[in-house]
Length: 85
Image (cartoon, rainbow, N blue to C red):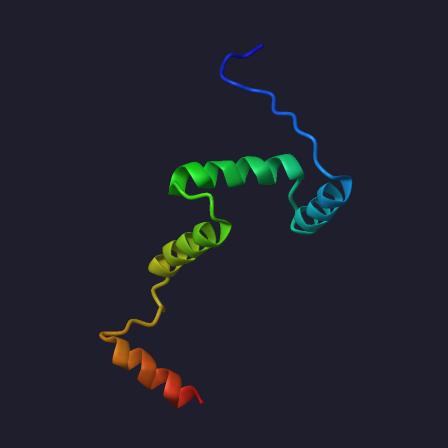
């Protein structure tokens, strides 16, 4: 056996597992791959909070977008919000 790998085993309520599997499979993933990717993101971002991980990834994508809106002040943001109403 490879000393660089570990086998994980845990008991989980079947309904929770099936609901999770249904969601990730609709997005073209499998349970193991999704859990492994989540673990890698926890390590990469040093946070176990899924919402925080998603927000960090969103910011990284926005930074790459040449068409993103840029504001010089918070009042500019508020002004745009008022204009949208």
